[in-house]
Every structure is written in structure tokens, then in C-alpha cells.
Length: 155
Image (cartoon, rainbow, N blue to C red; front, side):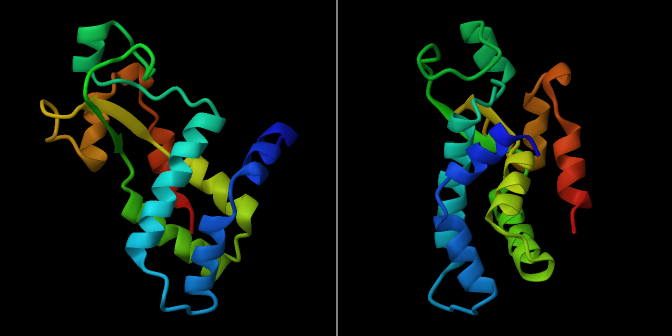
């Protein structure tokens, strides 16, 4: 792993890792899945920002704005950030990686970044495209099937 990537991963908050570790390894029943789900969503936003990910816009956003990738400064439409690989699925696998594979923070966050697959879509007009179906909103040349393959292969 390159040092810059490792530094970016290391600088991310340890809160999510600590919670997931305590839930699955230490059997802390006070930590709930909805809490972990929300923490993973916040971590995803931080990864998107810190790693400067280029998240594609749906075709309707592209048609309206002319921008292929999300940029909140340039796209003024009401949009929704949609996970192609659902947060709940990534959360369940993350728990398994910590519990059965002994993933530490860096290894887990590396996996989380590699399975973060997003699209921005118009809130009202494109809400039939959630989860894996959301990949249909990404133009073929911008799709990343390797993210889905990586998610399915690990463990």
C-alpha cells in the first residue's frame, strides 16, 4: 500500500472501527446496527472528500448540468447520494472481516474505500434505481464492476 494512501486511511476517525470492534469482538450489545450504519455513512462521506473521489452523476443530472461528476459547487439540483453496494451489506461484511479475519483499522478502512461505489441521482425523478440497480444510472464508461467483484470476493 502506498504511503499517501496509508496516511489518508490513518487520518480517518477511528470511531467506526472502535464501535464495530466492540460490537463483534467484545460483544457490546449497547452498540446498534443503525448506529453503525450511520457511522459508516459518515465515514463514506469523509472518504469521498479526503480521497477526492470522482463520483458520477446520473444521466439526468448530466443532461441538466453538463457535468459528469458530482461537484456541489456547480450542481444545484436536489440530488441524492446513492450507494450501489448498499451500506447494510458493506456493514455486515465489515463485521465479518473484523471478527473472522482480524482486520485492523487500516485494513478495514482500505476495504471500505475499495467497496465505496456511489452515484448522484435526482431525488424525485430517479428513485427506482437504488442499490445494485443504481449502477444503471452510471454511463458504461464510468462503471466500476471491479468494486462489486472485490466486495463479493473478499471473505
